[in-house]
Length: 211
Image (cartoon, rainbow, N blue to C red; front, side):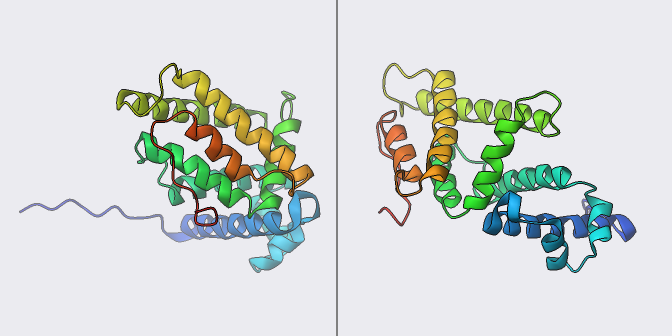
């Protein structure tokens, strides 16, 4: 009986390069989460993965390039950890609460995201394209989740999925700025859950900290 051939992963120099980049991005995510994007240095990232400054610059020639790659890596990690690609509508919206809770433990990365997203509104910014694509992706993803919830009878009457998705994204990003300015004044997770609970018939699950 014929069997399906196993998919072989990359080998040789390409595999080594990809593995090195993965280590760099993992380290960068930790450095920027701990120190913020201004204080977190390329040298500190390089030291964490056992590279020289030149070795790091070979993969990411500028700090801007590394910052953007780190943001993309952060999205990939969240997509993996919260099963974003396979979650049903309600689970995906629940993930918005859980992701907010995770962000409250990563102030450096939140600061990186907020600062770069504001700077990237100018077309010549290196992260301009990244943020346009990301916002399009998130709005479409959340719109689809709300549509599924609506089709299942899980949304309250009068909720328009596309507008609600835009409102949710705006709320989450705006809360991040308020929280960075004064972390004692805003609990982002509480506010996101409170808003989402006004939209649905059955309230969402609170993270363990709030349960």
